[in-house]
Amino acid sequence: MVNKHVPALGPLHNPDDIAYLSKVENGIKYQVHFNAQDEFKEANKPFLPLLKEAGYKNIKFLPIIDEMETALRKRYFGKYWKGKKSPDVFADDVYVELKHAENKGRNTRRNIIAHIGKAAKKADEVIILSEKELDFKQIAEKQFVVHSNLKQITFFFKTKMFKFKRS
Image 1 (cartoon, rainbow, N blue to C red):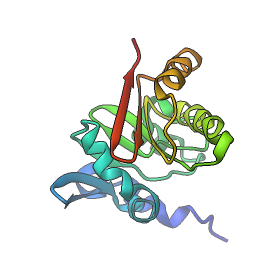
Image 2 (image 1 turned 180 degrees about the vertical axis):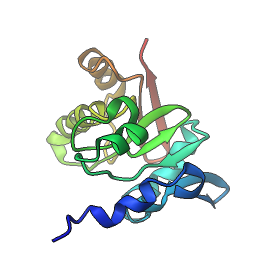
Image 3 (image 1 turned 90 degrees about the vertical axis):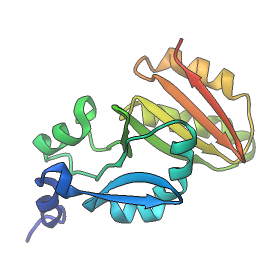
Image 4 (image 1 turned 30 degrees about the horizontal axis):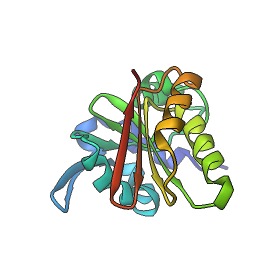
């Protein structure tokens, strides 16, 4: 029996100019890895305009790669190759994780903090689409203390953007 990840290995070995599909949507240029097309459509597409608004230009949606494929994980995920998870995007020379925080009443803040913790394990920057407005500045400042690798945390609530950089 063949492991379920084996058929997906072929496109991962292709050079980037073949593996990544160049696309334009609503005037936003981006690339999506051949193996990341389903995840893009199912989960990451709503973040495309947010990435642009946050100032990212060279946007690449990354594939999911099995943890056993060490060489491929190093190629695509750089310093974040270890572990089972992978970042969503490589944009402007940084790894970016995309998270959606649903409004869970009093637990929304806790959920956002958990999302940031998970994102910090696989990315330099995180974008959080929040269904509830909170004191994002306070959250970001505390998370920069906890997660030394994070360079930037950007929150979106409705039409507002709240961007915080490590000082």
